[in-house]
Amino acid sequence: MGDDAPKLIDGYTYVQALRQGNAPVREFRARPKPAKRPGADVRPKPVDDKAPQAGHIGHTVMPVRFDIICYDCGYAYSMQGRIYKALCPKCRKFLDSTDFRIDSDWQANVRTIGTVTLLGTGVVRNAEIIATDIIIAGDARGARLRAMRRLEIQPGAAFDLPDVKMQDLLVHRGAVFAPPGRFACRHVEIAGTLKGRLDAAGTVVIRPGGVLIGELAGAHLIVEDGGGLIAGVSIRKPPASAQAQADLATAA
Image (cartoon, rainbow, N blue to C red; front, side):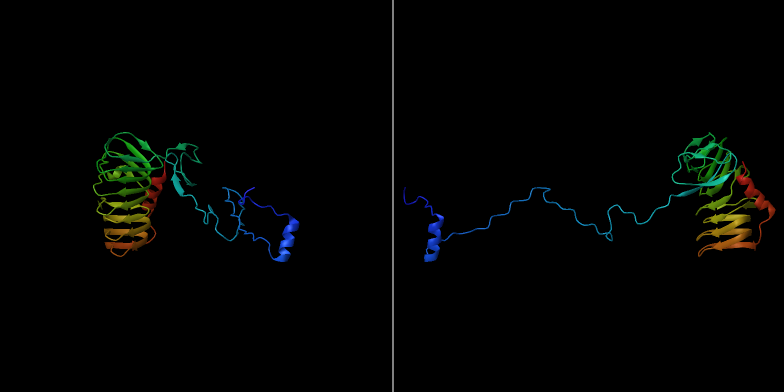
């Protein structure tokens, strides 16, 4: 064997060499740790009950509540959540909940517990519109309108007041409503101009920029900063005629 061949030392010889101080020096190197395989030695972390958990809902959101007035029998009730199809608890008839937006000529009757919006380009003639809320910005002269809850008048609205029934009234900014004679309803909100003699069974609110000109007899009056009031005011129990018209609006 050549000089470069490895030499073998038995255990006895190695011990003797240690005693004489001639033991060969051996170099020890730390073995590298093997790389962890993906997913290896994965231990679940303890759960902290006080820490916020993913997907935790802190507050419960209540579904929206809708006040519904049946357009067949006039019965009023409430529902929560999204309305797909409503059944009147009194007359047991299914009620249409479709919202309508009319922007052209229209001559078909509409009965819905939703909202009907007549845009400025819309014209309704020889038709009956019954809805929870009716918003008018177009021409509804010749149409019969029955808002089971509220009628909203926008600038440009045209209609025949004797053919209109409502409970509440909203006059939008820029609109002018001047009913002839004495006009009666329940709640009134004025952001535009209302001229006339008004009997309100509920609350009259004059918004900033709104003005009431004429006479007012009602139970409650609120004039916000910027609202105008040029009228004789009598805060009292509404006359029977005002209550009768409010009741008529909910009758079938």
